[in-house]
Length: 112
Length: 113
Image 1 (tube, rainbow over the protein chains, first blue to last red):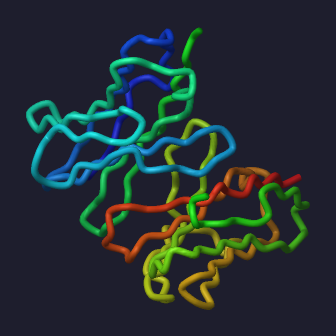
Image 2: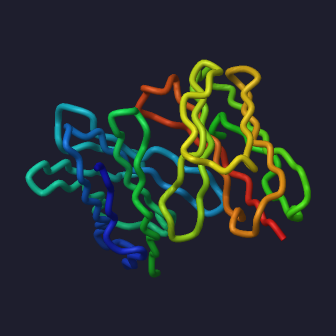
Image 3: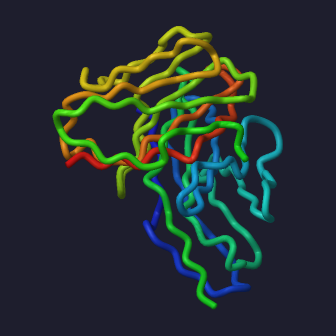
């Protein structure tokens, strides 16, 4: 069965520090992987996605993620956190029926 | 502006009430979705419509009834809900069911009392 695990329901970093949000997946077929962001009182917005090709994917707002098949990971990073990055981040995997399987989410807290 | 609009944004209803949630998309998409978002749980896909045909019903109780009159509109009819149905209900759309990018509305925060 396919699944997505996000390590850490809350991650706290200082403004200007590196952001690292972890996502591991389980899939028997080559995965399509996604990161979505949800700002307070908003719907979800696509940050970036990996389908095929280059394993380092760049998204909006300076975020990027690297697909590592050997580690079954798709961690999200940003070199320097801004206060505006405070939000909840969701990793997702598209299954063979084209449905998204979601992680439980990670709340990113930015300390001044 | 995401192109997907949900109304109302907030709804409080009693367990014996009947209400409806509305979703409208102006993106020309052919697939629309209802999700349930509860605290500390992954998003739960409830229903999928592709070209106005319901293609998925993920074991959702019959007290939730979807309706898709055209590709731009999606409704979720609610009746005799339970307190555990309180959650954020999100509507999303994509070009079609196989498309890899979904666009979400802001959600309806539902409280069942």
